[in-house]
Image (tube, rainbow, N blue to C red; front, side, top):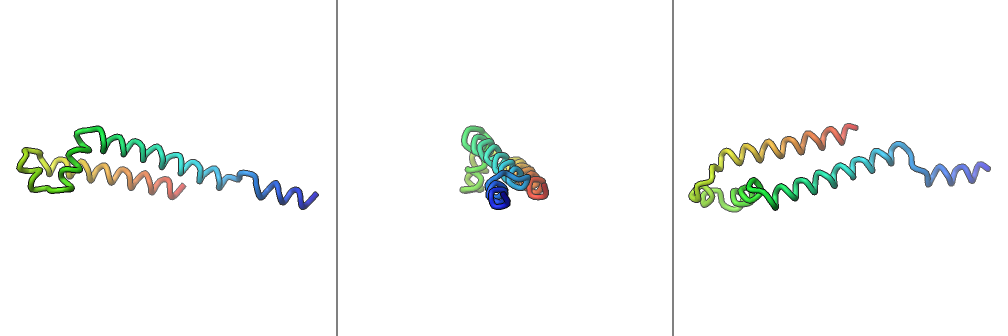
Length: 88
């Protein structure tokens, strides 16, 4: 009986596994949202443009300072969410 109990405990889900699955789930959701934003919005196109050549992006008339601040806010939000998930 003790050996069967040990086997069941080894393969059953504990609270730690549920937390890991939740973190992976949230990571996948945030990854998909970030991917969508960067690939399909003006913010994403401007982010790639500023990242490749800031001076040429300025010459096209895009306000690079505004979008850099928005991108830093986006990165800060993602870092804060990662910290919340890490601490939970």
